Image 1: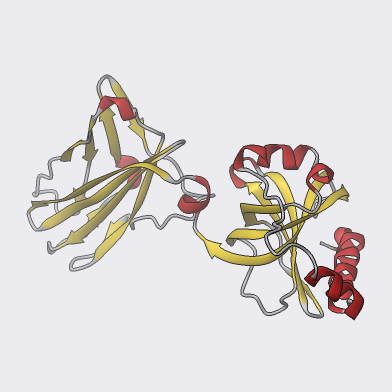
Image 2: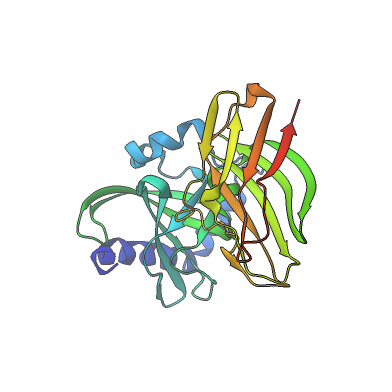
Length: 275
């Protein structure tokens, strides 16, 4: 973040000027039309914000991003570098907020509302050249990956539990997003033996297509545990590629194994349908 020193100093100056405005400026502001509003950048124009930040200088912006380096604090302000596209490590965004105590850290996914200060041209935290928008934030709130980058297009409430030999597997719901499918599962090991439940042993079958699970590295979704001791429950999200919404139905098949080889565990199969 030290490579951002100049831009941070300029942002700090902005904060200082805001805090030291004259009475004359305040009176001028109060004489403005009370209905006057700052123009807000539309969702459709967010891509252009990263191509030409100066074009949107002074406009209000609302966006989501993931902090990818340690947060810096200086005086009464906090400074952040975040990716607007964390999956591709793209859309570098520099954000400042006049709050040195805000609870933020590297890895957090944030919802930002603020104003565009302009463009920063220089080096990022890794020494690469970047052109990034700088945002003076009015508010920053922590959120999650699904809300920020993969909101559900369709939610299928399943709420079905199946039991084999005291091992109970439940699917609460399935969320289908633009680029992924999320299966919410819970397993309770009511047997006397350890149970193995690996995410990669769960498939979604739809027509003649088979979807395998994907890693959750960037999403931060909680994953179910793989080895479950007797009397223990685990729950989490298994992530898949986006399935076909037009298909209206799919089958979820999970293979579960017991350490007791005398117990034959058939695959748990759930049929799901939606309108």
